[in-house]
Length: 110
Ligand SMILES: [Zn+2]
Image (cartoon, rainbow, N blue to C red; front, side):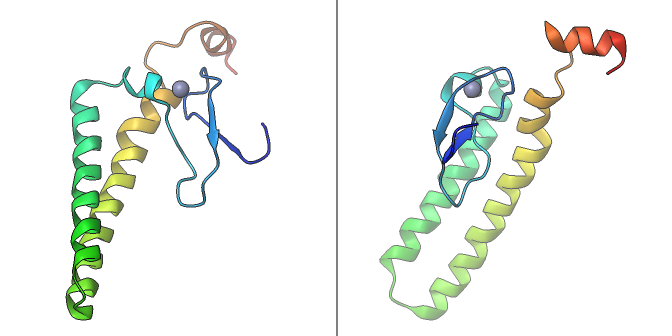
């Protein structure tokens, strides 16, 4: 793996991204489109909410409100990461129908 690059979460995909410090795992647009529609919609929904709260936090100068809104935003981003671990990651890392080399490893029990 190249230094400073984050690979797409799909092990069969060779795309990499410029590494950023907040997101350790990424999926490229091409692989994202192979996800079931319901999973994609849910994922985009979480992001939409997060961006909405980010905008609200930026707009207000009220420290108390900011603290409260940050708590809400953190809860949504926690749900987003749960969704990532339960729906998105297994889709690429534990496919129901393995193909190519994976099928071979499965057959020989590796
Ligand atoms: Zn990919």
